[in-house]
Image (cartoon, rainbow, N blue to C red; front, side):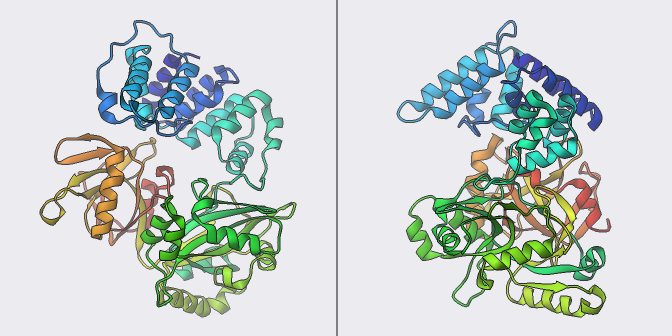
Length: 511
């Protein structure tokens, strides 16, 4: 398939706001793709490169290259060029990367160049995010969207699953199941304003401590242990203490879901940023472990032995967890069989959890299954303040003691068209360490810098606390955050896991 066809569909999808029309356009091009090209076409229209970021900055992408007169560039050729870009390393790498990039852009027409620059910089903005792309694949392959969604949740890759179903139809869905060693997308939680609201919504439930740590998924098959993040990146080598714990458990084959946390000398949990920094460190793990040892606390089991437990209710999965993991390595919880009679007990558990230094509680319906990759109402998180996970769209250079640091953050929520709606700015809550870290992180995401504002690829998620919403004609959603402040950076989350405008509007009264 020619890249020109992919670029054309991307433009047409960007020009329509109707999800059904977006899905129809995508279904048409997915169906036309050859079996070996389908995964690439889907990745490109979802704004992703299978190779990840190939190390090409916005300055290199901004250089003018004479475009081709007619479209001849195929998606396979693009994939080969990007693979070559990602492999460039060592002395002379900058010149070689420029040569490969110029050759790629020179083989593209003007429209194809525009699409390639967006794709290579992570700026594809046609609204073809995974949910819409999934609908398009389901229509093209003639398979149920629900079945396709479950397969993607279990496999972790829409392009890989799509390639299989486009070639094999509905029968291919049966090949996707939970496998030890293959991470699955984690179940996500909705929100509730209070413990009482959560009890009323869920009925019989478990109230668990919500730890301020890094989510991990631990797979063991004999002596082989693998640890993954919530974004499905393997980090086994960075967490030897977690691997040791997993090998000490009685089961030989299992998949566990939990968090890793660190503790201060007084026993209270350390801030998330410190845990994330430790988990993110690839160098001198032994020294990092001595400086900040981490502890795993598990709250769910997805497989044990040869049995997949995803469809079992919470009460049964926890029984399996308790048989496998000692209480010292499990998240503290309170079972509420009778919400009316135990409401005061649940509120007490909530207050004690906050006093212990944790960020809130998770309330889980006892009869709910594990919905991998889904954010529903069977798990509800309760925190003491309004919080949102928002995406950084830009940042302003600081002044005074913040000179040379990116400070004031432009914050956006996911919009229905696949883009981001700005909700305001904030520089509050940022410590010196956080400022230094975000300056480096946002520098790697920069797409432009006018000397005042650095615009970035919308990839860094930050957790924001705020006091409410106020009407504002300045912003596209018509509202702005009141007294927003940064609680923490969330490099463990992707932009697609940030909150939506709909979620923002549903969280509080607009003043």
